[in-house]
Image 1 (tube, rainbow, N blue to C red):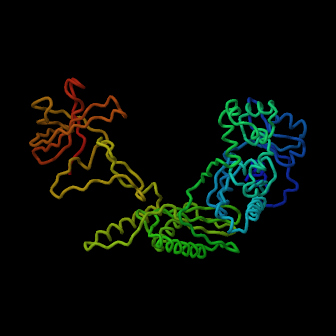
Image 2 (image 1 turned 180 degrees about the vertical axis):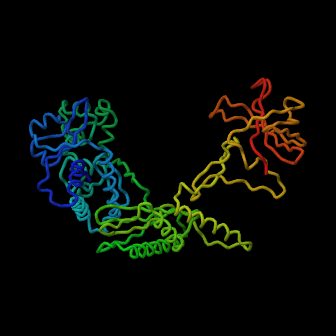
Image 3 (image 1 turned 180 degrees about the horizontal axis):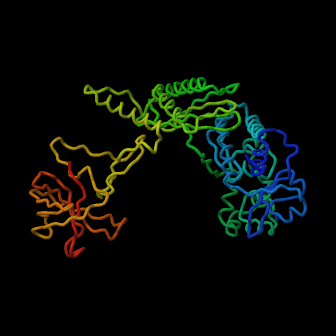
Length: 505
């Protein structure tokens, strides 16, 4: 799908949003600065009829038509509108990709039978966007490159299966969208159409214009194709409900959502799987789409639990769901699935306790947001400064903390100082444990010491970091500390310093 007048259609739609009458629309042009001069980057239909064209300077355009309306280019807003159009296209297919600055690629494989045939599906798409005020040209083709080229350089609605090469051979070489130098060189050589290129040996063309030319030809005709990479995760399991008349009451919305969740749970039960991430999509009749995502700490297919998370999510939205003129379609998708088999509850009840903790994390995440409910995850590193990291508690991965024996003392303290604190020490031997140290103006006489635990620095992060010798020590009052010496005597530093890194409970 190609939107040739996207920028001007957007501006006119914003200015005429309260009326559908566009017969009196002005001659609108959008400008951008190129090499110090303002040039037309987009024009609407009335400006085209006045003889204006893209690339013309603004001064020349004003000289020809003084009544034109000028607006500055806003690529960010154009991209936002294009993404909104892509969201609305997901009611027809879950695989939608952005194609440049003014186009969409939609993979309708497996979706056509829901609407009749390809011609009907294309017609519904075009009529929908034209009703929203956008000019659109769409082509159904066998390959993404053929459909794109035919939509932009021809007027063919649906290409019959296996006939992509027949139609694309008639297109100009500009349809290959080669660099400007290559296009001009081909025209000067008398190669004006794709058929002129396809009828010649590929080796001389590749030697002169590069392998990219041969690759574009193969993709155009079909022997080789590029996949359509969707802009959003394609749902593994999806249930949807369409309405003949849009609904707007929150009771009807929740009832529909609960019904779809139950249907998805039945499918997941048959597959012996559970969902970890669910997404509810609300399609408004005016084209706006709203997505709500909830995540769980463990795979689940319990409809009541998922619906409870959605109620928590909707109750705490800073921007509540606005039905506008109503939703004409609601979809429930399971984006991430994991195996889920029936489990036997242990006699000590630990499995129940773990489930309650996980449910609490899920509810807190739904209420406060994924980035506000965190937990510590163990890093696979020997560096104590990087031994843990914070990740969202919902669906956090990584290595968990190793279990300790009941009588085993922890090798490292739980509490570490953000920056190790400098201390003064007295030692019997340079490489041994200290006999006494002073911290915060208090002397601590050491009666027991274990170590050293030598930790070499991660040289790929900080090549100049010294080696550390860690000691677990205990003073006369039974307090236990974690000390280290930064640097090796006579090898790394002549006078290494001592630091206190943590306290044992």
